[in-house]
Length: 355
Image (cartoon, rainbow, N blue to C red; front, side):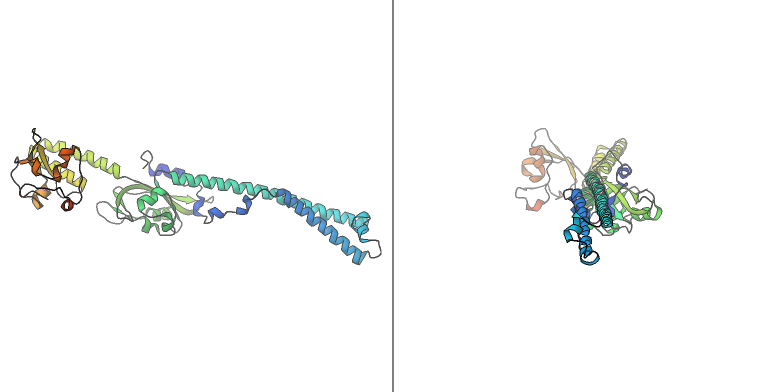
């Protein structure tokens, strides 16, 4: 994830000269021009055609127009009629000039095509190396291309997404209301200018993830300023949103602690932890100095309401009688278990303790 640049900054580097939206044969572009230079062969071929015309003209003269002039060899080269020499030289010269012109045009076009291939390769390398997600569409709003970051965030592979409506590949909703957010590409095609998403927008990935994002969309215009597509740049804001929520939570707890008891504060802390961890049960216990006893302190509001009936705060509990839920005490690091019932070394919990 590229946090140093906004989607608007990235747009400036990708909306210009986007040939991938107008081409479907990138790997087949005039492939025969990749052969060795045939300029000399073209000139020699033109001279050969000129000599062939010379020969045919001499043959016709010998068989039709100058039947009594002499031998065919004399009419062909050793002693041809004077005016025929001029005609044949003009024809031969014309073929030679024609071949030279074609050869020059061939070389120039080949160099132009090679330059375009090189430029396109650089554009694709840039497109695929951008740290933000990028999707380009055609003027109908169907996906034309997407980079690897866009594939990762949307859950769509580029070959699978190609030609699909952007709304299908890039479904977005408001984080709070869950209402569908207006498609930014449709707005760009309608207004012809750069637009950005509103705050609190969430991307619904194909694999079921919900990813908070920030994005911008801009028109791709040709040399006549006509819109022929849209480029969409967006980035994952999960870490930014988490950091912001964490700061807000800390400030809220500091403010809360000034006017509440330790018990209330611990409950509030556990409630905040549940929100961050998306958990339904949380509790807070102390390990006594003997390192053998737990002192039961506090549970979250949700735990007390839905899962726990224990009301003897400060009750002591022998660590040796506990199981996996005190693994963190032995290991002195966080421990995560996702399937409690299947664990073989679970032991016990205090009466009415949540499971």
